[in-house]
Image (cartoon, rainbow, N blue to C red):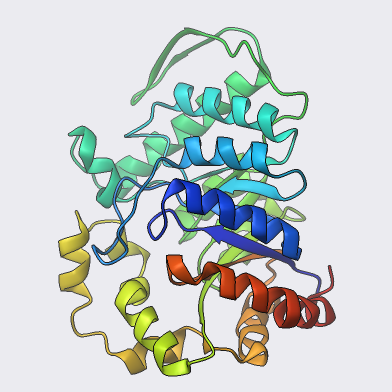
Length: 325
């Protein structure tokens, strides 16, 4: 099955100048698209960064010319009002000349608590999320928007700068409720686990034939032991699961929740080292589940250039043979 190869601008492990430089390199070595996280905090203090994703993506749009760009993902319900997200996305699409996709999700307490609005139960968050997507879609339609919802009000809003190509909307899913929302309201689906049942739920809810975008961390290094240690240091939180990750309030909580995760646990779940076949095999889970796009996360902000060099010489040719592109 064909599957496009993506690059992740991991804002939690690099500053804004480096992130732009890295995505320029990703375009040069042949990545098909790039996604960017949108956080106010890193998951762990060891990661060390959290620049503004939208400013960074604006710079990336000007520094690149071919590679697709995407938020992975923006929460449009707490830190940002959906009317503001719509304006940001429309402007970025103009700067990117049609290469931008707005990836949306219901958010994590880690980032959204900073505005002091509390962290409501998941069903309330999903209700607000649906309203936010509706607001954004109406603003993308053009004209003046008035919206009265349970969670959001919009008063005589209009986007004065709309791109020629409407911004596609992707919605992150983790279960039946979010899959239903994505199937009904999104142009594509986003998931971080290679679960075929998620894809099936999305398709049965109206998503058949639409793109499906996944993400997978790897830790490339010619020294496998160093790769494993780095992955454990920066990504030991990864296996906690979305239901846990969405609720934890800060890096200290993620550190505490992952304190018993061992290096061997991380090594079992994340490809570490320089074995191209291991990455291709891990990606096959996503292809088999029906994903059309997969963005890799190279763990370690200071390890991006070696990873890009390896991609050019080893990974990209193997990927092309396995998945086309």
